[in-house]
Image: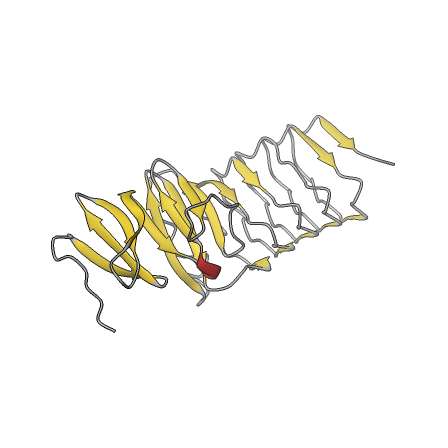
Length: 231
C-alpha cells in the first residue's frame, strides 16, 4: 500500500519495519502508516536485530518496539574514545564485513553487527590507542589473540558472564588498565593475556578458571594483589 510521510520532516530513513524521521535535529520513529511509534526526542536511532533499537539521548540505550528498555543486545559493542570519533579500522585497516553501523555521539560509540557476536576476533581493536573503554555484550564466549593488544589508553573493560576464554596477548600492553573484573564463566587465561599491563594493581581469579598459561600476567609491575576465589 501507499506510505504517507509528512513532508515537513528534515529527513526520513528506513529503520527496521518503520521510518526514523528527523525534526529540529532530533529523531523519532513512525510505522508504515505514518503512525508515531517513538516520539521525536532522540539524537539518534539505529535499528538492531529482533525488533530492537539503539537510541541516543545523553547515552546509548536499548529499547524494543514497544519502547521498553532492554539489556545491551548481543549484536552490539559499546565503547568510548579519546577524541570522540569512531574507531573505523583494525590493526590491518579493515573491519569485519558484518559491521553494519559504527556511530559516535559525545565520544560514546556503538558498533552494530548483522548477527549476534560469538567472539571478539583476532586483532580487531589492536593498537587502537584512541580506545578508552569497552563493554562486550552477553553471548560472547571468547576474546581472540591480540584483540586489544597495544590499546595503551584502554582503562575500562566490561566482560559478560559468558566469556570462557581470554586469548593469547588479548590485553597485552594495555598500560592504562588498573583493574578488570573477570566473570565466573572464565575458564582459560592464555599466554601473555595481560602481559605488560603496567598499571594493573590487583586481580581476582574466579573459581571457574582451570588454566592460566605462562606469562599471563608477566611484567605487570604494579600488580601487588592476586586473589583466587573459591577452592
